[in-house]
Structure formats: C-alpha cells, structure tokens
Length: 374
Image (cartoon, rainbow, N blue to C red; front, side, top):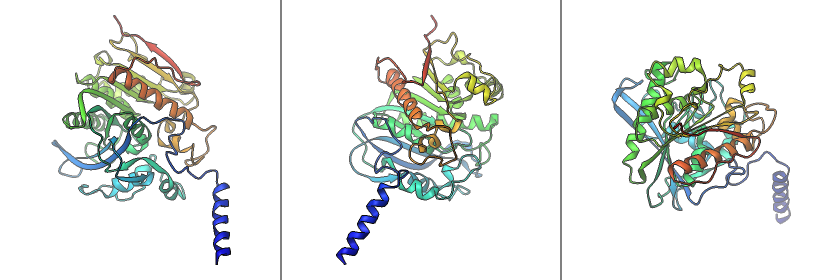
C-alpha cells in the first residue's frame, strides 16, 4: 500500500514538472507586475437605471462588477468564477446568458476545447466578498469593448488597480434595445450613459473618494469613456486601450452624432495603440491625432509594437500561461500588456493621487507626450 502511494505521488510530481503550460499557483496572469499593498476583493450584483427602458422590456438592467481594496477573508476565486458569478448572480433579467463561459467569448468565437478547465485552474487575484479595507479610495469606471463585452477581459487591470488602492467598477456592454450590442450610435450612447450611471452611483459609496475619479475604456469602451468625460466636470483622468478616438471614420459614426468635441475633454488622457505602420498594415482607419493637439491638459500616446487588438485584453494575458490558447501568435504579448497596465496605473497615480513620478514605459513601448496648451 505504501509503495503504491509513493509511486502515485512520484507520478503526480513528475507530471507537474513536465507540464510547462500549467498555471502557477497564484497570480499567474500578473507576470512581472508587482501588486500594491492591498488585497483585492470582488463582488457582482444587479441593479437598474430606472430612467431608461431596457432590452428586456422593463427598466434598463445593469450588471455591476466591483473590485476594491480588501482585508483578509472572502473566497479565493479562479478565473472561471468570474463567468460563473456573471451567469448565476441573483437578480438577472430574463434573457441573460446562463453559460458560465459566455463572458469569455471573443466575438462569435466560443472557448477552445479544454478552455473551461484551463480557466478554472487559474487563480484570480481577487477574493469574492472579502471585507473592504478601511478608508476612501479613488474611483475608476471601466468601459468594455465591442466583441469583448465582459469586464472579465480587463480583470487584470482591475485587480492591479484595486491592489494599488482604487475602487474599480464596470458593467458588461449591452445594447440599447437588445442584449447584444452593435457599433451603432444608439448602442454607443447606451454605454456612455451606463458609465455616467456608475459614476453617479459609486460617488456616494462609503469606500470612494468622490473628488478623485478616473475612466478607462478598451475599444468601444474607450470612445465611451472620452464621450462621458467631455460631459462631466468631476472626471480627473481618462485612459484608453486601442480605442477608436484616433480613427476618423469611427469619430464620424459615433462621437460626432453625439456632439462630442475633443476640445471639450478638459482632463489628462493616455492612449495606447500599435505603431502607425502596424495600424496601416492591419488596414485600420487612417489615424487622426486631434485629441492630442492643442489640448487643455496633458496628452500621452503609448505605442506598443506587435500587438493584436485582442492582446490589449485577457487573450493577450493568457498567452503567458497557456500559449496559443486563442490561436498561434508570433510572440508572447503578455509582458508588453503588463508593462502597459503598469503605465496606466502610474498615469492614474499621477492624476488621482498627486504622484509626480515621471512616466517611463519600458522598451519596446514608446511614449509621445503633448503638454497642456497654454
């Protein structure tokens, strides 16, 4: 019996030693990121914006994802738990997705074979329902992107910021009149108003310092964050990852009908995308740098070479743990994504925590800056 047990243990340990793609036991997607001094808590709930009709026939339903500085306690989560909570949280309206893997879909692409099991093996950086740390913290409201509709795609940034003393909230991107969002002025407007709703809701939260508010957006969410910030006087900084605010055709389609003018964005803005030549090679719309020129506040443009659009989100982070999870890539984008997240954190610290440390992204990231126009 003892010999059999020892043989079993040896086989298990041997298997672990020869499985380089297995995730590490903690913070596997954080890579080279050094977390802040706080533990991270997470909760998910449903609410509704009673001022607007919803896609389910009633008032507009909004699922609220919240990461926050926490004390020890709560239930340690895996990455798949984000999907489980989203699919099963009480209060979901009729028609909401019931498949726990739906939040990980990339456009119409479902999880690859074995994807559920791999996500379930990855330990998240947050603990569910952990007791909140004492104090009041700056608020970051995140806007997800189209075809990357779930906030889970930016959970790495959210966990990182919460560990550094931020309350981070987000809502899945849904349409104005249907669950699935489209790139239309109506659905774009719906996300802008969701961001406004979350700002107003959490400004009054006891853990939030209402005088320090930042916005983040990926893809369509980045355009929504800029649009929301131009209509408010309580936002202090905005960050956008690979967003359409430098694409004239998307500006004409979404920002212009809403009456958004970049000259009205009074706060500092950091934008991240690929080098111009790579954007041209990908046949993306021609760039316009109007949001940077003659601006009333600091503007920063970070170029990150060799990044697919998906690499600015969860798919890129997963490459550091499960290579080719979503398909082959020329190189591992995870270290560059981590460097970009670190840069975004430093930018928010600069403008929401009065930290005057100069921003200096590591190579191969490059930084171009425009000082505030006088």
